[in-house]
Amino acid sequence: QVQLVESGGGLVQPGGSLSLTCAASGRISTLNAVAWFRQAAGKERERVSCISGSDGRKFYADPVKGRFTISIDSARKTVSLQMSDLKPEDTAVYYCATENLALSCSLYAPHEYGHWGRGTQVIVSS
Image (tube, rainbow, N blue to C red; front, side, top):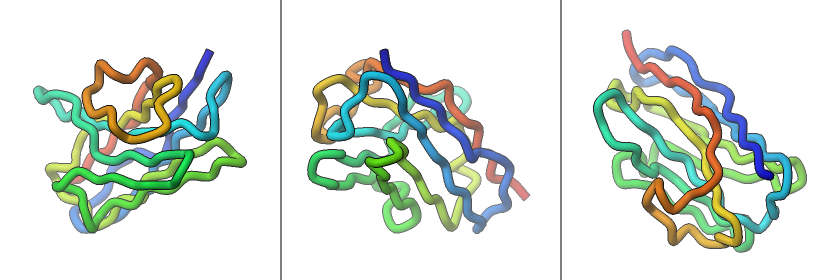
């Protein structure tokens, strides 16, 4: 069984920064890819970033490129998402996700991921 727990969300003003952390435990390989998704009210869940535990490759959705940075600490089984220059449109619940035997970030759709955290709320507002 795999457990994922997100932390670090909160309220921040536009232009500010937040760092989210996803802590993994259970039967998860440190080689797995881990993705961050977000879901804004009334919108579909979308993948914003992903990192491969096997080769360290990183992927970002266009709306967050240059503003978000994903990193992994394999020893601690944590994946972080550093978010800067936050905008109101970044407001959403942020989730981390992974899938058994998925070593690359080739999975994009939420239904392709079998393990999810409960999410952490990020609100960007003045």
